[in-house]
Length: 358
Image (cartoon, rainbow, N blue to C red; front, side, top):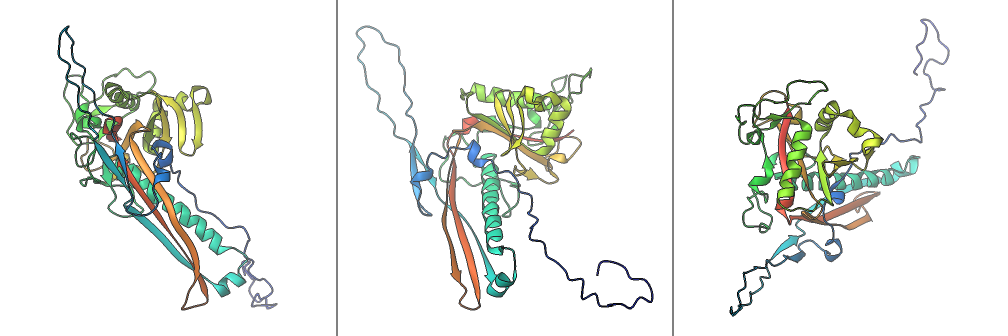
């Protein structure tokens, strides 16, 4: 009984006429936005059936242009048919049991509730894995943000100059890429210390390895420009910490008149330096992450990433979801498997940056 009882009160002392009533409304857990499908190339989705299947992707051949002089003997160039593979090599599953008696006595459809949650958890793991992979990191544990530098090539690198994380070293930003007023840079592999440029501030030059949020985004855009990456189809994924600092620098960015859209499937801004901007809690994070404060840290940082929609290919499929009777009890078992693959196709169209708060 929820109400207190005065001392000496003896009427219906056991509270049996105050039964517990279970609400028909179920409190659902909050869900993170999944953005992988919005920023990757899923053109190969229909060509994948079962785990182990491989799609060979042929690269556009390079053509050599030569100077011509009258009378020159022309030697035709042999075309290269170089290709690489997108392989379905990742599999996750779920399985749960619903007892017949519990199902009969309950006014809540637990099987449907659990199935919905299972589908979300599979999608969330897919999002964490792919965002980590295209940023150059991998998960040390399932259902956790990628926190370890990726050192295993998925098949073969798309270009010979890519590292074991399948990215180009020139497209990875850290504290060594930003200098102070005297030209001194921060430490290599350390996070860039981000600080907002407050309205009316007179100090326009941050410390070595530090920079302003819009300056970092502009640098990422410039690197893509230098690689001739199309401006149409560019995206940028930020975590909540970076977005907070960005709001401190210029809150007008998030007004509707400036392209702000609110949080809709992760999309929060339509155009910042040519990027569609998404928010995600599934970006890579090392140590205490991007909320770490102080000098440039090599062990505590978050990662933001920008790129083009053609840079990474994904192919995913829920191969099988089934319900069957448990042979050892009176219950239904529901299980499902998610098969997918991902491949960096154009590393020149991805820029990743390590950062934390100044």
